[in-house]
Length: 325
Image (tube, rainbow, N blue to C red; front, side, top):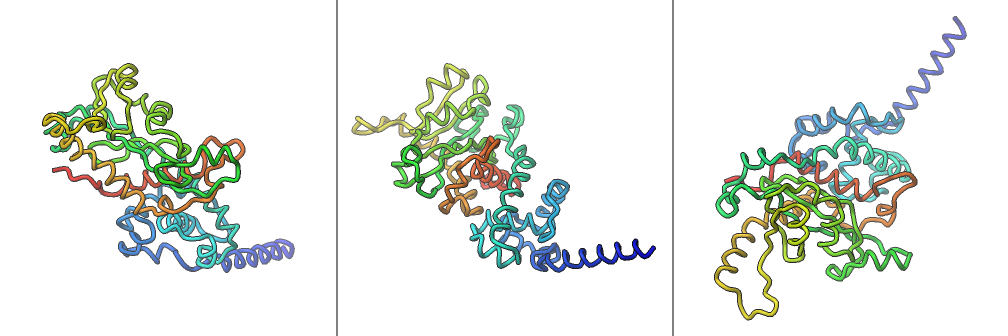
């Protein structure tokens, strides 16, 4: 009994030490009933939605001595949302900077696996039933996706070949480039892995797995850089609509002007969604460290691949940026 009592006392001391290590900030009580605070720190519009997400992820989040599971999620969302430096998060949560970096990467891994299904390519029947009136007016119910690319600035690589592959002549910076596809209803239905900024929009579209989602008879809306009509027509028997080219022409015909105007009025939705993703989760608007674009041993995705996917999934949880009227 004496030995058992001593064991329990030792365990009690250890547990008290662990509890004292956990920061008292950013607990559930700090966010409960505070939608404005929740939105500022996480990008999610309400605490109820944040709690639903936490409940979904909680069984898979790691148990740590320095932070509870809710704090892990909040810390990760804060970094995605506000692009906070590791040093600041270290001060806020009372743990070492290297610990913050490791916990962030671990939590991102779990969120990526669990939230990847939130980016869903809908069935054709669902698309047709919920097609916004603006699309019905100009294209009927055949539009399945609107595509565009966006680029994320990255640190200058030390390797000369990597520098060449990531240099974007459009942005005049080293970048990682992603292909994003949205439904007419405004939800993200496709996000590619990151490619070097030098790669063309056409090349990414043809080699990232996007075309496997297109069905016969679908209409894909895109910008002029996506000269993929022949590929989509031959591989998918579908149609690509892009604005009329003005190169070599003094002016467009009235028919081309009208078709370009109709296309521009609906294609702006993808730019609006990209804007929402990057404004809501500003880590995609800053310059990412070089380690974000390097695959770890045995990993299939880089950290920036996972982050881009999670940010799009989080935006899908929020109200659509597209007007349904």
